[in-house]
Length: 173
Image (cartoon, one colour):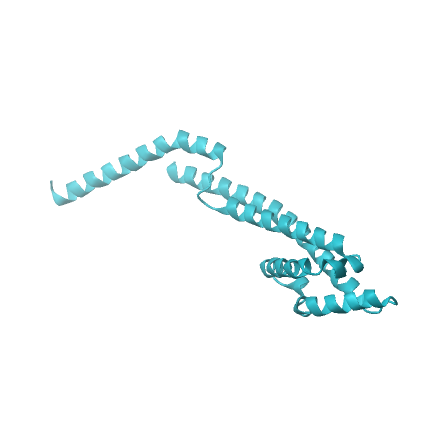
């Protein structure tokens, strides 16, 4: 009876974890898709503006392409999720020192959205990791454990007592 109960509890916990993971996975993939779209827009806009007829715009684009070249070459949109997050943080740090050029290219809002989206992605990823920890027991599961733990302890005590009696019999005591 106890093994059956333990199996059912494990199965329910696994189902809950799978459901939570699938919800998080869907949200994470949506956030990552948004990050990729913003990065593609950022890099594409910079590249296109290199050919702008206004010299100050073209110079700003050339400067930003040189600055962001390492991220463009690394193709950060297609890196692992964690690496992409780290590169975005680095890109945003670099961007913070060049607000004039980014404004000249009309990319201020893109940078703001990229920062917000990356922070939301990381917060969601951290929440998923926190919820995955096996020691976290939902309140409703704690209630079930409180109801069934005395039964479980009783079975264990009975099993150990019986084992001790069998051992005593074998030893002739």
